[in-house]
Structure formats: C-alpha cells, structure tokens
Image (tube, rainbow, N blue to C red; front, side, top):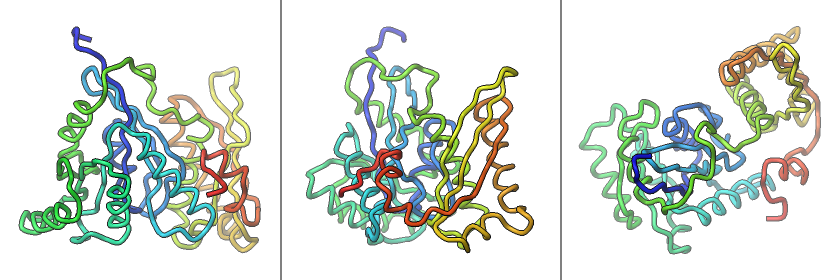
Length: 301
C-alpha cells in the first residue's frame, strides 16, 4: 500500500427520508448495496457499505431516515439511526437541496446533533439542475442552523462532488488495520441482502397500493451442484386484501416482482439464481420482536 499508513473508520450518514443516503452509499461504494427507491423510509437496518480511498477503508453506515415515529418499527428505526451516529468516526448529514429549505426532519437531526455535541459535515444532495443563485442562500440557511465542519455540494445520482466528499472522509479516519477483506462490499448477510433486493422491487412495482405493510424474508438459501443457487422467499403482508394486490391478476404481479429480483440477484451474485417467491399474510408483523431483531433493530425503544 505504498508505505502509507492504513486507516479505517466508520462514517454515519444521517438524513431525512428520501434525502438520498442510500444512493450516496451506492455511489461511494460503486455497487448497489442499500435499497434505493422513490418511496421514503426504505432503509430499515444499518447496512454497512465498504468504500476504499487510497490506503483508507471507509465503513459506511446507512442509517434509517429520521422522521416522526408512529409505530414500534418507526421507533426502532430511529433508535438505530442515532446509534449509528453515536458509534461513528465521522457524521455526514445528507440533505435534499431540491426542497429549497430545511425541512422538519432535517431540522430534527440538526437539533439532535447539537444535543449530542457532535460534529458533522453537510452533503447538499440533488443539486442537478439547480442554479447557483438558489444553492448559495440554501447553504447559508444550513450554515446558520448548524456549525458544519464543511459543506459539500453533491449529486449522489451522477457522482458530482462525491470524490471530494470521500477524500474528506478518508482524511478523518483513524490509523489502523482494515476491518474487512478488500473484496467485501457489505457486511449484510447475503440472505438479508437478497430479501432487500426483492423488497425494493415490491416498493417499485406496487407503489402506493402496498405502502409499508410489506416485508420480505429469505427462508432458504440452497447452493446447488451446478454452481447456481436456489432462494426461497416469502413476501409478508398484513391483510388478505394486500395479498390479492401483491399477487395481481392471475399471479402476474408477483411473477414480475420475482423476475426483476432474480435478474438483479444474478447480476450481483454473478451466477444463476432460482428464485421462489410466496405471499403470506402475517398480521402486525411490524410489532413483532423477532422480525425487528433479525434486522438488528431494538424492540423495546
């Protein structure tokens, strides 16, 4: 590694739902790690992506979007988000510049950071197409609201400004050995990763018909002799009516979800995937202690 000392540390990304945290992690890592969709609140666990910058390994913690909690699942997600910030060597607040203002959720994050006396940098995201005369007053609003160490103007989608942000992160990391082998992109177990991929397709294809009453679990992962893998998954919904929506007419909707998920998994795993997807009703799964534990979320918060 050219004689330079190795560095390694944790970077927490905090932001309102849909600020673009997951897209940013995928941009920094260079692969699709976290679930990316146009619907808010889709990251449920602290998925760690791993990015390399020179001799520095960055372990990126993609925290759930912080919002006003209503259910146990919401409270568990927010607890996970703040835990991620507390454990990190650096904190990046990701904000949606296209809003043109500081929204309530982002203000709540800034207030929380002040209470914890945490330093942070600001990544003003989604700057594509925004004129400079709109960006500068917005940056001024944020500077007035919180004493950021630095402000980065970025587009997580096309990568503008992301190299500068990654370089800054790398400089902030403490010296020490790398925590993960060079070829590992995420420490999320493959079964959970496969479930996240399918869950993304559910969100994208069912839009508002099936908001957050659906989750996907990988029941079985079977390695086959020919090098392919069989993945059995269940899509859980809370009511019979939602099951009909998920199946679609003559099962067309669930087949399309399965097809898109299988194609992405094959690309990710670089081998053939046999995906078997079932739909079942499980009432109140969002209040289920075991489900939250499997995602690394605390039940009693």
